[in-house]
Length: 148
Image 1 (cartoon, rainbow, N blue to C red):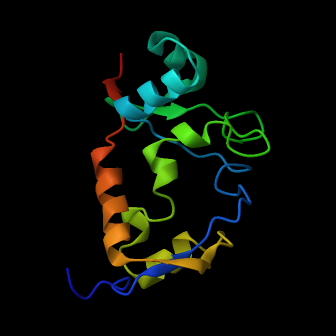
Image 2: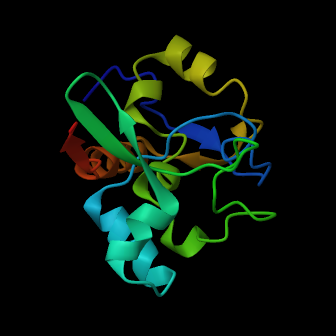
């Protein structure tokens, strides 16, 4: 695909500020694989993982999506002076900040990543790597259920 604003890559380095994990309410949507991986990592049966660490978020009148719970201070439930499940983190976390919704155009990228101090610094990620992140994000379809 030619003409992408990130054709020559984008610089980013996680400086472990944890701003994307803390202080603001948000959603970390989980695919079946994400939830199973986290349950295995935590050495717990899958059927206990969802009620213990997840919540269902209503999208509209008909569907809910599975998301990780947050603490009362809006931190990711697994943030403990850093990510306590880093080795098993969900696709949404692994692919940040190279999310398709952030990569529509350069202005969207700048606006969406303005609060991340690692954007524009560090390693140059190739267009191919960024496209792989987009593909991984697309493949990790969140678990959904019909509203009761």
